[in-house]
Amino acid sequence: MNTTLLLEQLTVAIVVSAVVVPTVQRVKGWFPSARWVEAFSALIAVMLGFIMSKYYAGYDTSASAWVGFYSLIGAETIYRLVAEKLTTYKKLHENDELGLVTGIVAEEILEENNEVDEGKVG
Image 1 (cartoon, rainbow, N blue to C red):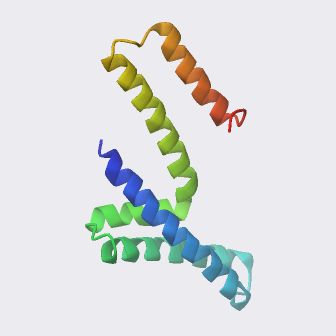
Image 2: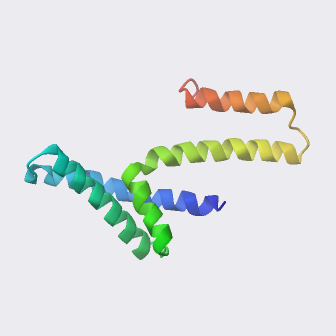
Image 3: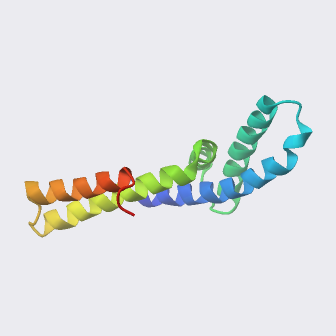
């Protein structure tokens, strides 16, 4: 799994979201109903995600399509979740390489991660 590419794609999608939200807010009065606004927002997110990733990041068509999808579903939330899980995996992997991972250490790391997921730890 190419996690670097995934995180880069999510970063581009976050930038796209930062452009889409104010754009939709500015033009939402042009549409007759909320359904039209939602459809416009989805269309703009996918199109801008695809175009910006092709132009600025130089991704191929399939990678750009993924950026468009991430832009549509909310890249910032995905990025936080993936980055957090990768950090946990990295801790476990580093400790395992040092021969430090025991059942207790692994449980402590996973419990710490669950506390962060639940918002108990900052």
